[in-house]
Structure formats: C-alpha cells, structure tokens
Length: 530
Image 1 (cartoon, one colour):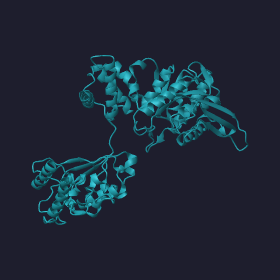
Image 2: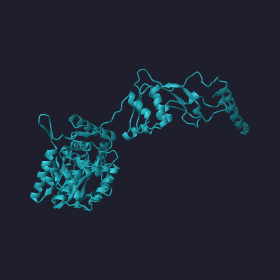
Image 3: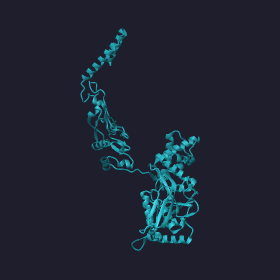
Image 4: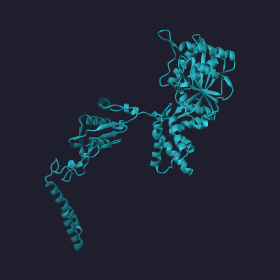
C-alpha cells in the first residue's frame, strides 16, 4: 500500500508539472511488476502460507448447529472451490483461499435438514451418503469448467444427524442406497394428518389462531364464535369423528382470509360470519375449479327432488382436488337402471355407462352378484343397463354401490324409489352398508339441491360435521344393511315391497351370522376403522 501511494503520487506530480499522462501508464506497469515480484518472493507454496483460513468454528458453550440445506445446489451442500479468473502469472489466489465449506460441514456435531430430498441430484445424494457413512468429506470443485475442479482438500469432518423430508411419492424416488442407510441406521416416520379431538388439542388450535394473527400483524383478532368456527372446520377437514386436522398451513390460510374479509368490512374483530365467508375463498385452486364445475351442473336439472320413480336413484359423490388438500365438494349423482330381456341365448349382460374407473366397475359387478342372491331372480335372463347420468369426467370409487343396488332392484321388482331422498355407501357382497369418505360434503350437497333425506352408513354418522345453516334443513338417516336402505327408499305397492323386505331380511340374517364352537352365534364383524 505504501508503494502504491508513493508511485502513483509521483505519477500525478509529474502529470501536474508536465501535463504528460504517460507517467500514469508507466506507474501502473511498475505497480503490476512489483506486485508480481512480491507475490513470487513471499515464500507461497501450493499448501498455502502459514496462516490457515478458518472455515468452520464452534465454541464450547455453543448450541449444536441446525443447518437447513433445502434446495441447496451441489456446491452449497457439499462444499466448493471458487473459480479464480487469475490462474497464471503469479496473480492467482492460493487454493486454500478459494475453498468454501458446504452445509454438511457446517452441520458437524449438529443436525442437517433437507426438505424435498428427492430434488437433489443423484450425484449429490450419493455424496451425501458417503458423508453419512465416513463422517468426513473432502471439498472439491463442483464445476468441471472451473479451475477449482483440480483442487481437493483433506477430508473435512462432517458428523451430523440427517433429517430428510418429502411426500410419499418423492421419498420413493430417492437414491435407493441413501434410503437403505436411513432405514438401516435411523427410522422413517409417516407424519399424522389428524390428532384426537379433545380439550387439550382444541386449546392448541385456539393458540394457533392467536399466533397466526400475531404473526400477520395486519388482521384483527378473532372473537370466541370465530375461533369455534375454526375448530369446527378443523373437525370437518379431519374427515373422521373424534379427530382434528393437522394440516395447519391450510387452516392458517383460512385464518388470514377471514381476517382480510373483516378488514374489508372495517370490523374490529373477526366473527363467525367472516370465517364462513372465508371458507370458499381459501379453498385450493383445484377445488375452486371443482366447485365451478358443480355450479354449472346445477344449472341443468338432471334429477328429481319430488315424487317417486322406478329405477331412478339420487346418488351422492364427493369431488376432491387431488392436490393433497383435505377439502371435498359434494354433488348429486343421478343413477338410472333399466332391465330388459336378454338379447342373446348365452345369458344377460350388465352394461354400465358413465366413464367408470376400475374400482367403480368392480363395484357394479359385486352389486350384480348381490342382486341375484337377494332377489332370487335369475338375472342371466335379463340385460341390466346402469347409467351414471352426467359423468363425462368419469366416476371412481365404490361409494355408489348402495345407489346402484337400489336402482337395479327397483327396476327388477317394479317398485318406485322416493325421489326426495339421496343415498351414499359402499356395499359388501353380504348386503352390509360400509362407510365411505366425504360424507359431510355429500350431505350438504343434498341439502343444497332441495332433497329432504339422506341415507348414510351407520358408521359414518359420527363423521358428520354440518354447518349451522344445514341443521334442520335435511334429515340424515343411518343404515346398516341393504334391507334398511330399501325400507326407506322404496315407496308404494306395499305388499310387493314388504315381500321383498322379508326376503332380504331372511337372506341378510342367514349370511351375516357365523356359528361358533358350542352352538353360539356371532354377529357380523364391524369393518376396520368403524
């Protein structure tokens, strides 16, 4: 620095006296030459000068480090050697000055966290595996185009605890060797999406709402009724009785939207009304698209809400956004059945239309076997046509099994079905009505469509968490067997209806009980999770 001041000071003095700027050029050349001679003669070697560069430091009383390496590229994760534009002439930077530690080295003695682990390149995952096994990893240049790629340090300690996160599909696409080490030396944890609905966990939801308001700093606080509405929504999104959802990010979005609506209304506090209005706005984009589709469907009345008809049933379906969200939209799904004499001598066929998925088609076949058993009819003499009305986008799942069976039996026996009710439920081959998903959304869809009663599986009754506006608007009736369904669904022609119900009762009673040693009898087993 002293030499630089001296030589450039002299140059400017000469320019001031003579006006010749050549002195400045000569000063620059002289400075570069002297600097080169100084660098070459300073005793520098490839191992660097005597003073080491401190890369990672920890004090004795310091807490173990927690390093978040989510989204880190190879150099940031594993360490790198900087590129040096001055690679010759004695001006290059010593290799040790260009070494940069990675997240694995900073996490030495602590925790390394990587979210969406599958987004790391396979090479980086393999290097991470090596670091886990050896507990040390040399720093090399990560770019082939850089001079740093020729530099390699001694092995640097990196003894850390790895915590990797990801969705099920992403975890399955991890480097198999890395996942094998995780399972061999650690453990895999599937995070729960619900927690028990008790006083302690409800208080945690209340605290969560307060934290979200405080963190946002722009929305007003919630009154008691608004917080209760948030808890009810946590129950709804859990989809199971006695549970609260743990998808707190989705609940946080609902809290903020309700707060924004309250701000727009210039309200001092967020009320339950604001939360109810916010439920629609805070839904995911995919679910909003599904809601728009349902609204367009409602413009065309493809089902009846009064009277009775043969072979026509108002089924119910739930549309999910398939985006990992816990939201459902309900829709009334009309199902029509027609029975005609078989057109071939080889026996009748069952024809189902409506772009059915694999599970839905299997459900239709199971229902066909059930009808043959419980009605006593030889359905091989008939062609059975089942139509899912207005399902151009397809149908999947077996929750329409009860509706299919009711429509076909109605068509076979010539007994009308009450059009003021709807139904949902899976059906076992023994005539038992099994629980289904999205039952709350289905019941609310029936209420919005003007229907008066909904038949739901008995095991789903405790899963219902209806909004206050639906209370008293629709009657929910639990059913356990196909006989229960037909008892409420079929109308008119009492002798024929009672005869059918008696046959069904006898069949269900004969097939749902098993003999135990000693002559005792055992009732039907409740399905898992009921």
